[in-house]
Amino acid sequence: GQQLNQSPQSMFIQEGEDVSMNCTSSSIFNTWLWYKQDPGEGPVLLIALYKAGELTSNGRLTAQFGITRKDSFLNISASIPSDVGIYFCAGPNPDTSYGKLTFGQGTILTVHP
Amino acid sequence: EPEVTQTPSHQVTQMGQEVILRCVPISNHLYFYWYRQILGQKVEFLVSFYNNEISEKSEIFDDQFSVERPDGSNFTLKIRSTKLEDSAMYFCASGQGDTEAFFGQGTRLTVV
Image (cartoon, rainbow over all chains, first blue to last red; front, top):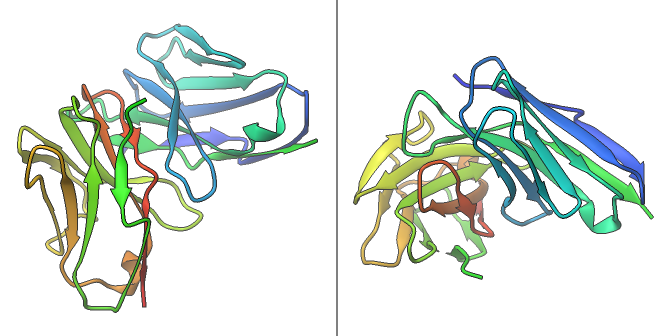
């Protein structure tokens, strides 16, 4: 089945630093989604990417849909303590419709004040 | 801002008992989903529901599981005879189209 691999698995950074994480797949995706999950909460959609090469920002977050359609990255600039959480990439299975999302295993972000 | 709401937030049940997890999706959405997340693991797809029927389900979604949209607003997941390994966070999600999903805050199911 579809597999999404995220790296790094975890990051420990100082407040104010920039963060970069990525997600790769062995197969093509037509949509890339980035979610953030706080402990005990549901994933919150941060950014959705629909076109190869697309670069989209949401405040301090920037995400890009790779040209090969097999990867995406998420950058967070000037990190703050509330950026702490688990970041997941996800995409709908291109072989089916009806929105079945495959999730990566997540990148755990810790921000030290 | 509209959101997906789930009840209860935490459910503890005896092994073998039936549980029903409830969700109110965002009102103008047409696609509905259940996902689960075992502690410390990634989010896994269970089932999608569109046009009043199941459109896709994973191998996790066996005969113990069923979904229903009993009225215009609720979407439920029933587990007929719970097992210890059903303990997880269960997330309901909905979407206007089939390319993105908005998640509820989850129901933590603990089977003892």
